[in-house]
Image (cartoon, rainbow, N blue to C red; front, side, top):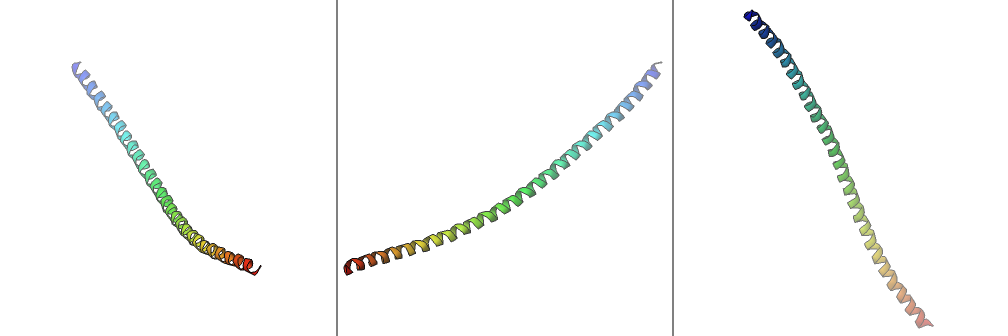
Length: 99
């Protein structure tokens, strides 16, 4: 009788350990799948962020060039205004003298 109990305990242990092994094996596979998903998701996000960063850098360079062009135009217009102001003053002086 004792041998029967020993055999039953051994059979239950073997079946239980095989079930536990399958459980942990599936658990590990799910964990690896989740890690792969996270890894691929992170790669996709990094690629998108790099593209946004490159676009932002190009836009910044374009805006910097625009600022430089506008600065040149402002400088040229300042010179014109200065020249026209001097010319206007000279014309006012000539007008006063001819009166």
